[in-house]
Image (tube, rainbow, N blue to C red; front, side, top):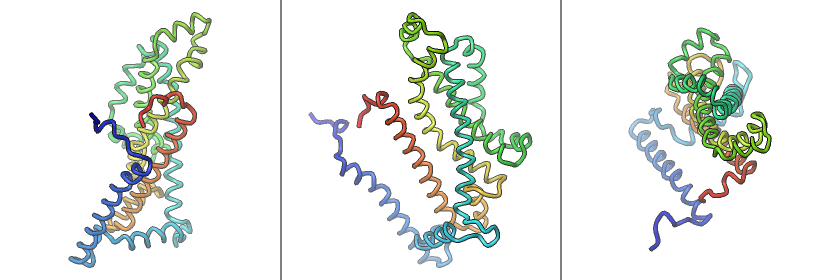
Length: 273
């Protein structure tokens, strides 16, 4: 008996199935936009695709009269710099503390509960505190990303290291490995593939924290631009910016997935396609 869970579409069918949902969303949007414009020619909620393309082209190619910069490019560069710095610090912190918590029982006993409690604190709730302590500059925005992303990475890596079979650790010590050598030769190689996966899962939250911080206090950035034009109901700017943020997040996720499979193919040997 053939079961649905065992039906695997061919390569061409997979591409077609992936495209269909996006086509349906596009059709629904175009029909909704046309209907609203027919009822109200001045409607701003669902601008026509042609209007969004025109606005996006202008913001992505023409210098701003006030600053002389290309608006969309400047916003993208500002946001990606903050995101890269925040994610980078969070990733390094998560790997270091996670491996330490997972491999050192004494360190886990001392800091495991603290990390668990910190991970439960809503990062958005402490954003005003960060602005008070670090000011309205770049540091507070980066700090929000680190505080929001690092604790889940720490806990995930710690659980990954703790899940390593005890036999591997005992065997490494039997062969004369020190704690540091056990970390480098046993724990770290098994933690790195999971690190990339958990960073992929944190891309969305990282963008959320970034946009929230930029919306409150910034003079450039993708989140800043979205909340700046919202007062004018400029959906022809907001929707393309949302789509652009989504594309950036997707490309980051795709790049990390490719990196993980090329650097650690053994970790995905039993993966279902």
